[in-house]
Length: 82
Image 1: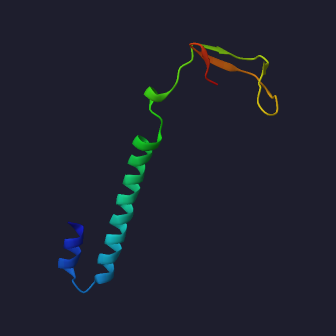
Image 2 (image 1 turned 90 degrees about the vertical axis):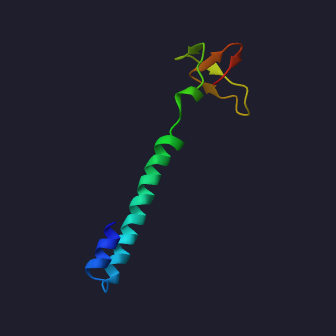
Image 3 (image 1 turned 120 degrees about the vertical axis):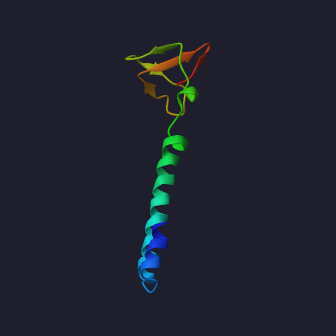
């Protein structure tokens, strides 16, 4: 709508038309990016795992390559989930 108004007022002012097109394209990209971040990237609560028990502030010995120690462990059912 704005683009047509600028052309009707001064059809020789082509640079103004290009500026408006570029502005609208950038605006559309920003709106799409915000929508993508809100709905596409943020985790949904339904996908989060919940543990039956979480043991924290302890000393957990792991059996990885370095036999490192951790401070917490989470158990879900009969499995260690983290």
